[in-house]
Amino acid sequence: MLKDFIWDFDGTLYDTYPVMTQALLTALHQFDIRDIDEASLYRDLKIHSVRSAVQNFADQYQLSANELTATYHQIEHQNQQAPQPYPGAKAVLEAVIAHGGRNFLDTHRDRTVYDYLAQNGLADYFSGGVDASQDFPRKPDPSAINAIVQQYQLTPSTTAMVGDRRLDIDAGVNANVQTIYFNVDGYHDAPNATYQVEQLTDILPLINLA
Image 1: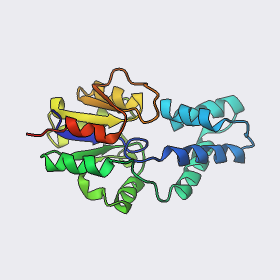
Image 2: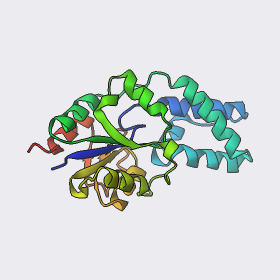
Image 3: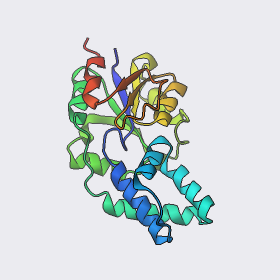
């Protein structure tokens, strides 16, 4: 059974991708790029990443990737004011702690992530973690997970990386921890995950009950 959990934030704990998608669309509009399908862009962000999408648009339309990235982040920060956790997030975080485990973050987002957690009363459920300010290599590089495991003396066989994208799962596999793929969009994109769940409460039976 699993004891300690390392959580991705965007698309795993919180439903932030709709605003992220809209923010990138708006940023592209400011560069006079308008013929982008929203559903396809959403899928691209989930399957790959914002960074990858920005670079692809920059290459295709001969834009500055840095300028497009900066515009996107400004818009996303303005619009992502009150993101909401997915149903069941609080119950699972509580259950982890109730059964002797700890929760950690591994996110590419900056420290605004802690403001979002605090808005929903979830910040105290976390014992630590890694965010963009610590400048670790991005997933699927396992460095951030390895650092959490080492700092908090976690046992890899009872520690799980939870994420909604293949790169989250690949990072966990590369760090030799257990992995849980949150198949929230039905993309079935991480067949290498130890476990796959369709909703966060499906994790409850996996938590250490000893």
